[in-house]
Image (cartoon, rainbow, N blue to C red; front, top):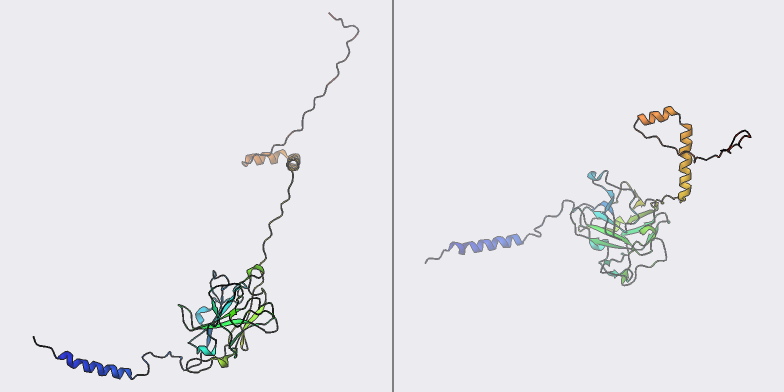
Length: 300
């Protein structure tokens, strides 16, 4: 049997080609905006307290989202997601998940302590721009329809109590939505997400472009929660006795019977409606005394 030497000559050629290809610095092309400043492209309100309602878009730079933006996110939604148009240098926006959930409520959720540079802060605009203690975590993954983003979660009671301490050295307690009406945020109240654009950078060390557009006031995206919904009160029912209802019905029937002319009753009957019959008053029996017999009358 003769051996084929063609394969033997081909191996060195393939090896040389592989070596040459390995000299390239990267086999994946960088995104087109790699060398441009990253941008905030969307902000969503998230139902993190209950996890049953869809996300609510409150800011977007996409032309196709016109008409889909809500200016009043529900106060029961417990967090906000800020999306970028490209991956961000994670160390410039948030710490790693370094805080476990507190004992009340418990669970396996992880949160992040804020950076000292404060790239993102939740503020109470109506409360004098007070900073609300929050967890800010960065997620570089992009589920279908989403972008790389940060998730801002306010701490338990931190929205209403400046002295609240939901963040400790080891834990963070998110607001579970135990407020009036199951709300996390106060209804009919203005809040904001403050962005320190100069400290946020992408992998090419390009700083975040200052966000602008509807809702942005300087470096803060402001939004107002809607008023609380009023519950409908059940109509008050007046309880009346059966005898009272019967007397009222008889009175109404008599009143109609006495006021209606015979022609109106006849027209009602010809129109296919049965006229209401009125009850006649009870008959009284009158006794007429028998006159005494006359003197001339004889009794047999």
